Amino acid sequence: MNLGLGNLFWVVLQRDLLVAMRRWSDICNPVIFFVLVVALFPLALNPRAEFLRALAPGVLWIAALLAALLSLNQLFRADIEDGTMEQLLTLPYPLGLVILAKTLAHWLVTGLPVVVVAPLLAITYHLPADAIGILLLSLLIGTPTLSLLGSIGAALTAGLRQSGVLLALMVGPLMLPVLMLGARATDIALSGDDPTGPLYLLGALLALALSLAPPAAAMAIRISAD
Amino acid sequence: MWTWFFQLASPPHFYRMAGSLVPWLLWPALLLIVIGSWGGLVQAPADYQQGDGYRIIYVHVPSSYLSMMVYVTMAVAAGIGLIWRIKLAHAVAASCAPIGATFTAAALVTGMLWGKPMWGTYWQWEPRLTSELILLFLYFGYMSLRSAFNDLNQSDRASAVLALAGVVNVPIIHFSVLWWAGLHQGPSISKIDAPSIAFDMLWPLLVMILGFTLFFLGVLAMRVRGEVLEREFHSRWAQDVLRGASPMEAG
Amino acid sequence: MSEFFAMGGYANYVWPAFGITAIVLMVNLLAARRQLRQTRERLQLRLVRQSGKRVNT
Image 1 (cartoon, helix red, strand yellow):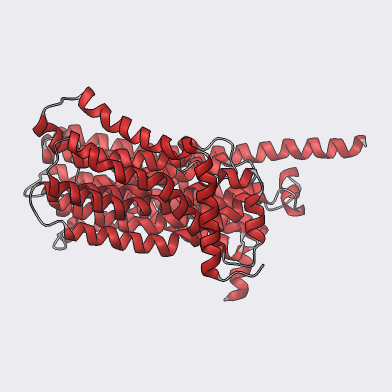
Image 2: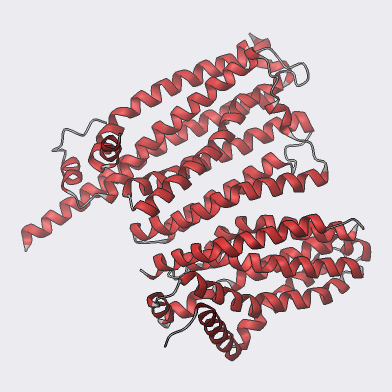
């Protein structure tokens, strides 16, 4: 079989999405976790409308970050365990592209549902409509960056038996700029100012992560597969 | 030049050389730190705004300088080890992390002690302290990844990738923290790096920075010796050293 | 002299800062020495065990 690079990308993407469809819990768990974390704050703190509104950008972004961190464990694990990864390693194609396809599939399955649910939860936090729009946009640009950064950590720990907390400890600090920019963009929109600045910066981080993270993760997965 | 470089990178030569170099680094470091402390605590005049409280910078600035310099050193060594597969470079990277983490902690604590009289509170979410805190997390992540592997070779290469990813992120973290702090109009320690600092206030600081750097190199050399021995366990020279049959053993 | 130790009223901050830094320097030095010594002892033990095995077989 001879594939072009674009085809390879689609084949890997389709395959991963198909595999994910068979395991619904993998898709549902991160979203359910996201909803749970968001629901914790009004219960633990104070359900007053103006208080929640001020909290909303930070809480929703922190919950999205935690959901992303929690789902990362699954990114390459199954492939390493059932031997798929070894076959992918021997392909005469750039491994970074395969990693990118896998990361995209992972984001579509775990990140996108979070982005879709976020506006609904924002309503329960009494966020005004235009701020919800910016929240949606910032999550849409920001969460793929989280997945890409996470792919490096997931690749590094793919060969380890226990990696949950370690993975979060490694990748968490790297994700902080995205969290700061995303939450702050929403916050700025909430106070009625122009949030395009941080949104552009988020876009720049996404471009940077798109170009640097897949090769780094490819290098990491080769080390893990040794 | 290149033969010198390769000789340096050869483990037995490095092991011997580092061993004899350690006292030449640590004693001058001690001397410089004592002179710098004397200069900073006694010689330098009190600041017209901050009184004697500013003297904390004589330990805070060298610590925070080392905390970042060590991280960059670690990442460069890790990159060299990853690309050219030099074991010695991996040994250097592995040895940097615990040293850097302790100096990051020192920078944090001294920064807080400076903050209490200046801001009225031990902690402000201002750029320097926040960046320092994130840097500490980066060190912790690196060290726990290292310890998660059983295989030293795998541990070296995996942690090298993380160190490189981290060092790409350090400027991004720095600038986003600056941007984020600017929004909140927090106070900053920018007073510390005022360029118009008087000479009798400046020289103890430079002496301290030099002393801390030499101290780092000395401690690093000690740690790298241990790491090199570990990585070269199967080679003849290392076993000679361990048996005490080698003249390399000095200290 | 006591004026020097008073640090213009900042004694509670200046001295702990210098003290903690001194402790960090000491800890670094001692930890590096311990690490080198322990590595050497551990490897020596491994070497003895290895050569012991070789004699037995």
